[in-house]
Image (tube, rainbow, N blue to C red):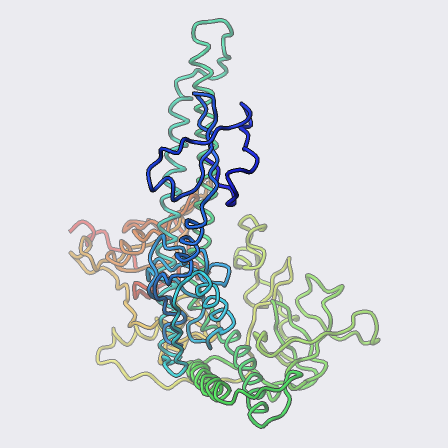
Length: 597
């Protein structure tokens, strides 16, 4: 049936697109049918086409219904909860009206709201547009805005960390499910293909042809499914890694320093606006909002400045103009650059043009060709004097057997040991290890142990960092200025197994890494720890992937012949930190008598 605007019954008779002119329904109709208007139907018995000319009474009634209020919608905003909509339910048409205004549905809250509106001022242009659209549709709208109801910055930051951890766990589950589906599809395809002899063609015209073609399609479908699910697993695994690293990135000292500079610049603009001056090319007169924003910025600055102060107490070096003079060398990106000029915010160094693969870049003595560029202080990773660099360059590299794997060209080195610890440089790619040759204050002496054995163990554990094995490890403050390893929990040691305790949970175990499609004469060991800790680390899903996994053993054999230590690059540092484990890089072999006891 088609409804057309109201018209007189004496007007032209409508026509059916298939059967021609229609006929008006007889006058013997119910009161409801007569109220709706004049009806015309097709003359063909099997055709259901019809036309209705609405009556004036029906049109007036529909307009009155449209003008009648449908209910009350409340739009609230506080800086603690953001902008939310109350009084709406599914299917009432409110979502369709508010979506063009920037509102979205929050499944966790079961409400409509504006994304990213928490801890911010109310977006009144969106709220006013939404209220106008709702009122035009017949809704009664109440707007309640309270800009003073807010939470502290520390509470908001902690909630962001918790939500990031929840996202990481959820995305890791998605990745695991996709990997399981990929493996199942791969096995399903191989199960069908294993029945077919290798090289067997499809016998055209044979009674087995239909089944062979079905098997072929099933194998192709399983392979495509496996590849697609594998890509999904990689996608979700990447998002899980990004969410898991959110807190570390937020707390990164270089990132925090840049954030502080940005906040200080914003605070200066707000202060100028409060004084009635122009900032950023314009002026503002909303004094109340400016005062609220000023208080928020000052609170956030205090939070991040305290974070930097804590990092400095743990041994992190925050570089500034007072630390450099012309002629010093600065390490940035794995290269030593000669300082040409010390600026307030940056350092002027030689341009890396024509200097790629060179561990030390000096200013062109002729003053032409290379040029210069500037770097901010937050990207500085080390300092050295001209004498220090000359001494490193004059040092003879060790034999290849005594070198280590270069962290810069490890992917293309194919196991070659290219890095010279004595020079602190790679003999092939030119990577220079960041170092700080400035004299550092000696850490506070540790209290003497009551037993000589405990004192020896504490001294050996404090010699190197448990993550990067650098000699800059500060055992008293439990912080490494080199890799910034800062475990929050008390370390757990992996003591050598005592006689008769080899099968206990606290006996020593060696954790090593194995990879697919790699043939190595010796096992690659990462850490030594207790058996209980090794079981916890190796059973964590983050220590295994499609091409590698961590394993443990209590009988590794002889060091050098059956296994060897490899460089720990901190890939599994979040796992160790979460489990509260500080591994060792020393293996105490178990005597045969104790092993057999």
